[in-house]
Image (cartoon, rainbow, N blue to C red; front, top):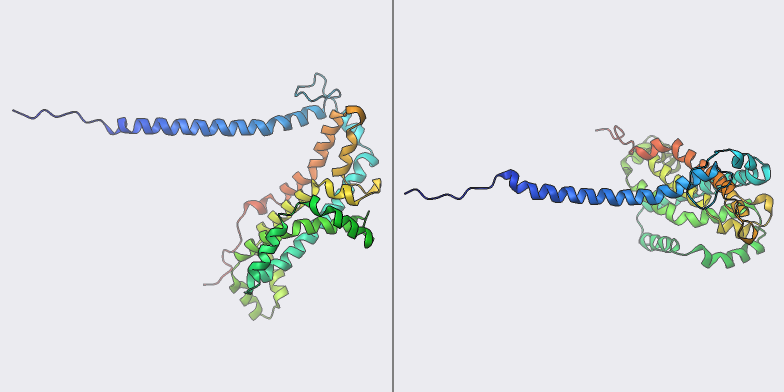
Length: 292
């Protein structure tokens, strides 16, 4: 008599539960991403719709008669032009100072060995944990003593100092990816360390410089507390502080003008990102830099 064999399940039958489980996990991940996208999209939708609604409120609704009256009301030197110019001067100067100081500080930390390097980096990392509100009172007193209060230059110096620790960490990490042999080749050709840094290292770490630039500028551009405390003259206030004027007394808020001003206020940051997006998306240009 022949032994009775039990039928074997096909390979597709074993794969079916796994495929179903993978499908459920993918759908759950897609649903979570969709919820997160909606959480960001709703405020942006309110911003765009309210900017063209003359009777805007906190509700997200499509205006029955879209208008540019809110933008027309902002076309005034005192409301928009001067604060935006102050913001560009303040944040642009502070960002340039941050990039220059972070580069000069990150270069020796990346290239030279010292027993004090690790404690120094830990101290720099600790300063990033200090909230600005905790040091604002002594900084205000110091600025009064050295006559830097109510000056754009003094405020730019303090903004650059607040962003410098994190910028040093980022710049050092990007600089570590550049081979030292490239600088040694430049030194052999007669370049000094500063020339090697400017002409060899910095061009190769363009994406890193772009990241630090965008991050520093964005953090300074949205800073309200520091210029609010250190700048007293209304003509010197940046846009991050002047936006507060759209909140009137007794709970009255010009939501339409506030939304329109917010869009104008976000434009420089978006343009900066678009201008250097190629740098952000590219890798370090090391291909062919080292001869075999």
